[in-house]
Image 1 (tube, one colour):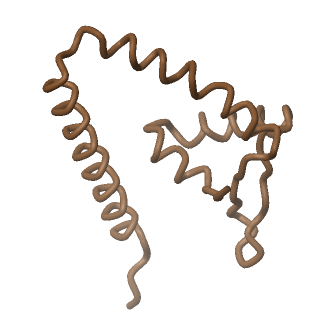
Image 2: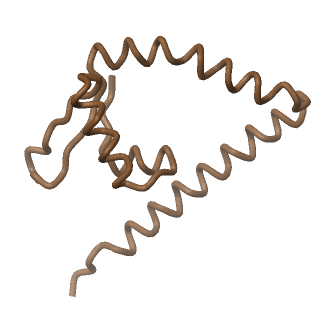
Length: 110
């Protein structure tokens, strides 16, 4: 399994970073994730699922799929395809915009 920073998780889930930090702390307490400090910069850390976290995720996925299926029942197949494509474009645009903002926020050399 891979690792992500809290900022990446917040970006991916469209949540505020402080909400993600609270969630990570709760999941760490429950043994679902492992948190490791960055060796080069102690301000940063990465989060990864533990074996217990992967097991819980595996159990939750069918439930999540069923919820999505129930929500999508009222949408035609063509509309569902269009919605998926539109969401993919929106997600990519949001990701690109966040990357641009991050680059603009970095201090520029004199």
